[in-house]
Amino acid sequence: MLKQTDIPETVHLSDSINDEEIKYVMARKTLIKEWLNSQDIYCELEDVPNIALLGSGGGERAAVGMLGSLHQLAQDNLLGSLLYMCGVSGTTWCMSSLYSDPDWSLNKRCDEVIKKLKGPTVGLKKAVDWLKQWKDSDQDFTLTNFWGAFTASYFMKEMDTRRLSDDAHRNSTNPYPIYSAIELNRNKQHCTEAVWFEMTPHESGFSGLGAFVPTSCFRSQFEDGIMTEKRKEMDMVLLQGVCGSAIADRQMDTAYVGKKIWHVLFEGQDSMMLKENMNMVGGSRKVEVCECVPSQVVWCVSELMVNAEDPDPLKTWKVITTLRQLLEGHVSSKGEMLWNMDSESWKRTSLEERKKFIETVSLELILTSDSWTKDWKDQRCTCNGSIWWIVQNIFPLLIKWEWGTTCNFLFKFQDTRVPKWMADQEKIHLVDAALKMNSPYPPILRTSRKVDLIISLDFSKEDPFETVLSAKQYADELKLPFPPVKESVRKEKEHPQDCYVFEGRRPEEPTIMHMPLFNLRNCKGEEEIKKEREKYTTFQLHYGVSDIEHLLKKAQDNLKNNKDRILEQILLAVKRRKNRKSVAQVFICGVKYFLSTLWEYLYFNYLRMTTFASLHS
Image (tube, rainbow, N blue to C red; front, side):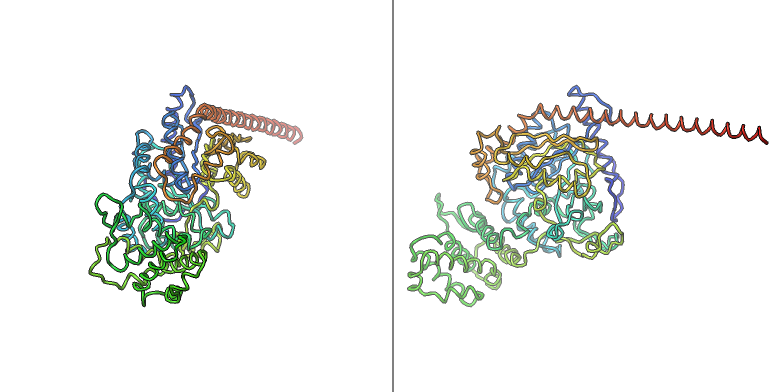
């Protein structure tokens, strides 16, 4: 375990990495040197290259792809080469699960996480208990809290309540983890510096601004750089919600998100309501719905949504009749449509009109669900309270549509390096970094991290070159070193190769190995690539076991096929470090020779002048 020193609970403005990360990096590089020796690559500690593994976003596709990639790197004994591991969106889900084990890179933790992904979801009660604790203790309770609980329980199948700062006290067994988010409002204004937000075990803050606070103090209240109120640090469940909240920018509207959540909770054979609140009858899949009014309403709304396209109008009319009886006096304006429709009119409406009617009424009931659940005290109710807690406390948040709200540690901070508009904001809103750039380049492009080789795993659904080209634009805007990447590479977006190497020209430029998930080597042509992309979409219900296994193999094949190329680039990175040192030594010798010659010249001229003066005195 690395010895830790106390980190001041104040704002830190600097382009340099903090002292604790430097300690971790030096200890980790000692282990990397041992790994290099095992590969018959011998060098001094100062010649050990800084290698970063980047995982792009892509929801569960990215989480599974990252797991498969890391599993193969472990199989090929390449994990020992990595100094940094960075993720956005779905890859942060994978990282947070792996890092729950302090020695994950040395054991079978990858296998354990894969097994969990294939297993059952976490019980709804456990997820709701977590939500209740946060709602009771945190005034910034938003949809991000729900999204974190949903991601952890539904996709990753575990609720990890450790805090990121807990990892600060670990040894250097694993690559140093960096999680990413962005500030939502600044991103909408197309800012560059005060947008990207990195989170490490030691510090969290804006990569472009060089403004940070200790991660243990992140979310606490600050004023002019001094903490004024200590608040609860986010745990890994909430971190997954922040990092994976791509829906926060309203590209998908409230209706779509509301219906998606409703479907997961109440519809289908795998719905959480079926698992938590309904009694199975015998060995069949028939269910008995609780007799309480809210359960009956939920059943009716779900039946309407499921049967909206049924050509028989009588089927849905029976449900509407039941719903009218249950909800009389408990609905809002649009819900009044229920009473404005009679059976004869319903029969005469077209299928399209009925679908529109059902969609409007269902959505209104979903978004105003607190009005028809909170006042009923039904003695017949045998339901677990988890479902109704979500109905009453989460669905109303869809109307407010607030995400990732937290205290701005730069509030009223007086320094010319902090933009005034940033210092004026008491709160910031952190969301999925993939909305800005679908790969975590910004933290790793900080010059103080001196990264030599970037292994970029791209799990994007569409253009696999968008990430690296966006990263180049970001680097150009902030004048950061970046290798040449030609726009013409986009011509291959529908049929990419398995690995592209963008070599740094100057000593300070990193080399990038860019690996698209679906490519011409692990797929049989462009048509299969297209089918794989369509099959593994970003916003869908969790994958089945066979889909997970198939995706794992695709990701594993990528790394297996490129093992030799990775080793080749690692060797080249070592040589570049050595050459850089040699050039520096030559430069220093040249400077010394120049200064020595200059001294001799000046001293000779001084003697000549003093001799001349004495002869003429």
